[in-house]
Length: 181
Figure (cartoon, rainbow, N blue to C red):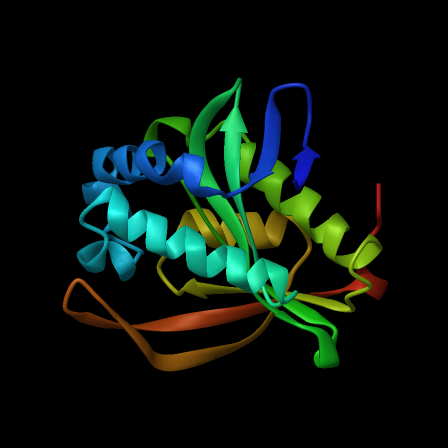
């Protein structure tokens, strides 16, 4: 099983079926907060939906095309971080994440992203990490900037969130630009 220690309080653990119910409860508890940025909430209405998502992630993990991890803070599930896509032939990954509203502002997600970036470059041999962020998602934009990502462009009319069509910034970080600490 994949477990990556971030620090003494945070671990990233491969999502498996044991997370179906606790992850659904966390999603449901944060539904209003997450709905501002996540399009998948409308189709995630039960632990069965989460179980199917996890099954799909495990298939992707087995084929080296994705990696989905639970974020555990002090042994409590607080969010998810993923390589939504591992594109081996282009040597890049696309990172996605979300964190429980009550865990915001503790530096958890920045630390988790840093750990996943290091894993992508050091363990997977990737050359690039990308993060796609809605242009008005200031917390995620701040994470990208803190980690040294470069704004590579803006894709207009990228997604519909809560009935509103939004634009996305595409941030990228090359392995040659990142200092592995």
